[in-house]
Amino acid sequence: MKKIALTLAAVAALGVAACTNQADEANSAENVSDLGMAENEAMDDVNVAANDAASINAAENALDNAGAAIDNASDAVANVAGNTAE
Image 1 (tube, one colour):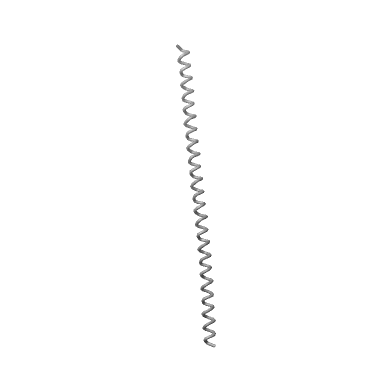
Image 2 (spheres, one colour):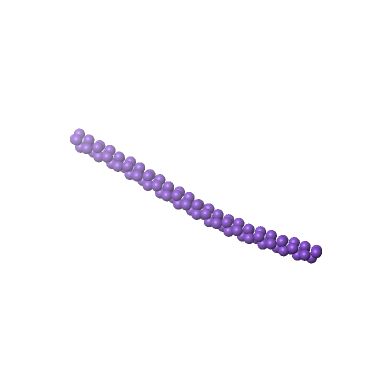
């Protein structure tokens, strides 16, 4: 009877060990999947930030160009006023 009980205990222990290993492998696969998703999200964040930076740069350039256009218009008005006064 002791031999049967020990055999059953050994088989049960192996079964539990096998289930635990599969669960660990499943958790490991899930963690790898989560890491892949985190990497993708991080890349998306970097791309959005780069696009934002490009948009800010374009806006700064547009403001610089508008300022230059105002300066040119001011110079033109000054030139016309100067030519008219002569």
